[in-house]
Figure 1 (cartoon, rainbow over the protein chains, first blue to last red):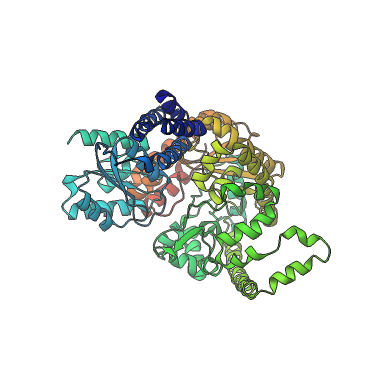
Figure 2 (figure 1 turned 90 degrees about the vertical axis):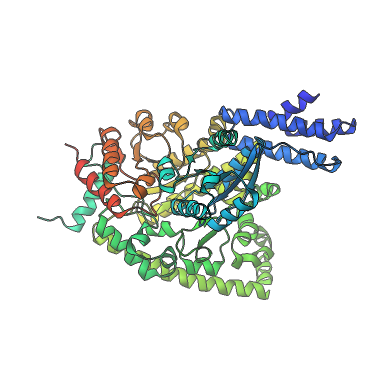
Length: 210
Length: 417
């Protein structure tokens, strides 16, 4: 039965997944076990995304199925079971830019891969990044931007992080529409990633290195 | 003897048309996709570009005269609409400089679920009614009262005008109409400013790239109606309705492209591609939801004697073989992140290829970097014709010396022997 749920979610069979969850709850199973299976399923989804069998629509759909399951299961939880996190990531779309599709995917992928992600949203001024890094003691920062105006905003954000004396305490990754390795050099970031998969592998590499 | 502007106009047009028809032109055409660059180059802010028509037209003119592109990226399309009009209609689908965006930044689209999933049926049943009474009031504050209009088609029955008159009697409707009339006057001022600019540019010998736009049917649903998230979920939850809606939209976009092209006499039709890219859907989904209606749009335009110019944003490398399936020598594919060298291999004998010079290089590289990259593009993609030099994306910012290097080098090195 447990295997069924993992497979149903991973194969994006929404109705079947929800049916299994209802049945298991009705049979008196612990909600934490259902959530654990859901997480295993999301790991499969993440792997398939890495292997280019799944794409953004699949991620969004699996996220939607997961949200529905959580809605059913969460009220039955006695206490939130603490999940061990690999590390903390502060992420946001830089000042002047309001695009968030790519950033949301990266946030989602980091989250299901075990990171605590603080997503600041879009059009985030440098000082907000600095504040959040100070507040959360995050060791990884992701800057997103879709337009060429993001070049300057990223550079300024990284400058502000440096001025706040945090540059040595964080690893910085950048990505989005017109971003590439050229812009990594220009902005002074540690790495550029072309997609959410590379964001996850960078974060894992960096979190492991600590 | 110097060429007259008329001769230059014809020469530039022929240069582009030769490239489109996969003939070898006299040299590689170069007419960069200037966007807010017009403003930054002339020293005005994007906000001034949107609000001060005289400054904007002067900026465009200065840029064109200084860089002498073979064709001019249409300054109307750059702004989408001028600021005063956007204010007057209270447009909610974009934010623009001075209105939700800093005065120094470009207008940007506001993602949203502008049509709800349960509204597909209403849209499919009577799209015009849906647009007037549901969609427009949602995206234009000024049209909010249109929600209260009676169903449009009941006016056909009996003394149907009575329904309309009754609706117009409401005070909020009267003020909406009044506000629309004001916007119409402003639109007139904008149009006449822009058409004098276009006439001036033509008199100086510079044609416009395009004056007509047609959107990809899938993107119409995904960008403007359901939003990215909505349309992606629809591919799983309600694929049949999505396909029906896409089918419904196809004749609308075809009509809009043909209409503008015929009115202006400019055969090139700009088609931006958004959500069919690598990563944004699987190849299977591309074949099901994106390409078939896009292909019919392309062919519909070609059948009308027009030249589709696809602006292929993001990466479509794995779709190139599929996208090859259109008539030969009739269209331009302008690539952003697609492997353009592979595109030349796959499409080079069928479709004119455009783009390839990374915007990042224009912004942060040296003139020598730019020249080296242009040389590679001209040598490989330009080989045997069928290539138009351009940046990979819209140009908002660029170092001047780099922009100049791109233009000068292409005009010199791009000459076919």
